[in-house]
Image (tube, rainbow, N blue to C red; front, side, top):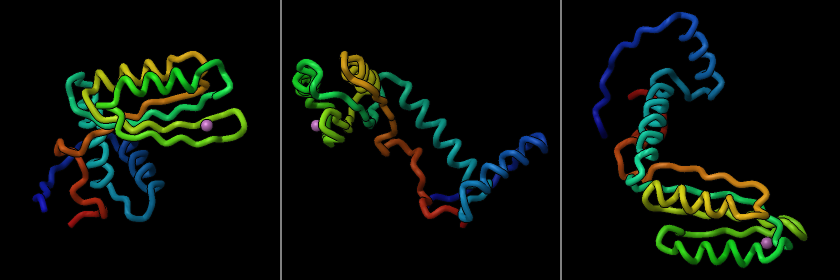
Amino acid sequence: MEELVRFSVTMEAELLGRFDALVARRGTRANRSEAVRNLVREALVEQQVEDPHAEIAGTITMVYDHHASELSERLNAIQHRYIHEIVSTVHVHLDSRNCLEVIVLRGASARIRAIADTLLGTKGVKHGKLVTTTTGEERVMDPHPAGGDP
Ligand code: NI
């Protein structure tokens, strides 16, 4: 287990009060240190994802009407073009018309974004979103997932 280093932070009392209130809302296991560590990790993952060459993981969630003209075929054809990035696709038939698809991807950040833009920009896709995250290989992941200080 990695050694933890203690350091002090100075901030306005009012800001700290609001931060503590935020930490308290996250539950009984939450504490300031854990909350600060999470913010730092979040910032590092965000920065990593912004690098177009960085290897990232992500999910595209989208809802579309499969009755729309050849939409299923078009979305399927796009996905077949990116077999090296698309790890898995889950398809859920929401009702008689609507389909939900969750696509898991892994690859260069710029390419993952381009694939998302292509899929989500396809006419007939009602709603969609790309969520990007780390592959976990960079050392930004939580080495103490149980939370709390040692
Ligand atoms: Ni369907």
